[in-house]
Image (cartoon, rainbow, N blue to C red; front, side, top):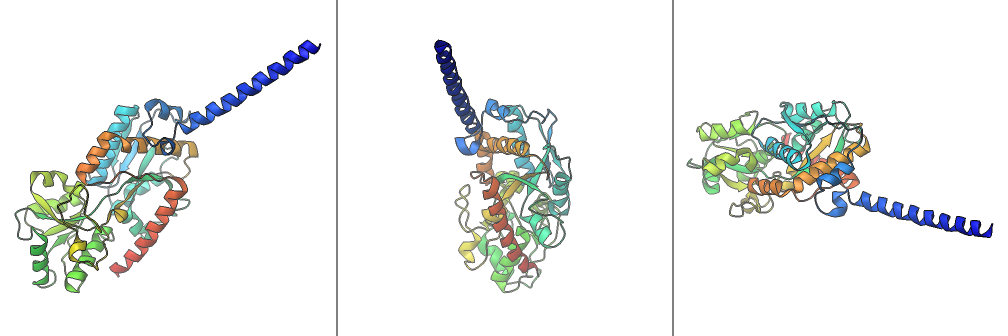
Length: 355
């Protein structure tokens, strides 16, 4: 009997040790499926290990809320390509345009909450909320995933035009009646729009110094400039990357606090107008990846880890560097909510310039 008790106690100890090892192994495995913990992109196997069992194999729709060929479209398609090639995840980009991006955003927010629809939110859309044109509760009406990229705004002009340097541009604005110089925009109540008004105010003392035709998209603005129908536009480098490479347009200054690492030889507006607010700075040009409200935590985490891993991929980083994007910081959770809160409060201040 004593021998049996001794063997029973040994068995209990064995199973206790085994259980402890399993718990440690389980914790280690959990740690190994987080980009934040690993400091690198997940492998295909690591990502698959956190894929919810009920997620299914249906394609993920990535809603690009602007026209094809623009910055949002470029980023979405590169992420989709890497998701398919590296992780075997089918991501389909759909361009749903209108309402300064809010039509695409609402497509995401009203989708079935199964995690198969993702999209972006940015300053232009939050500006629409501030203006009362977007009904969105940032606490309950959206599922935030991570920051996607930061961008920057620049003043782009025709390469062989009459305002192809900052000095020529500034002289034409200051030495002609208000409305002479046309500054085309994709839309209103955005960082682009605020930048135009801020530059006009600090160049001339009149924020309405520019004639501002609205073209509904950066691609149209660029074509109007190349055709000689518009003097300049404020947009992102990625919006006109092909025309930049081809030498059809040039950037005379970036609307940023500091020079852009990808374009170190191009000055900033801050260098010429030190008291002006740089609404085109990368902080205000951040794009945040979102999905439908009500998506469960495990699915939201899977999507977050998937898209961060794609953004950390060497191919995406190369595209980002060539296009002037910054894709190096990917906050999540409470840290992301805090950033969005500060971002939104700054945009409320920006909204005052439109009055």
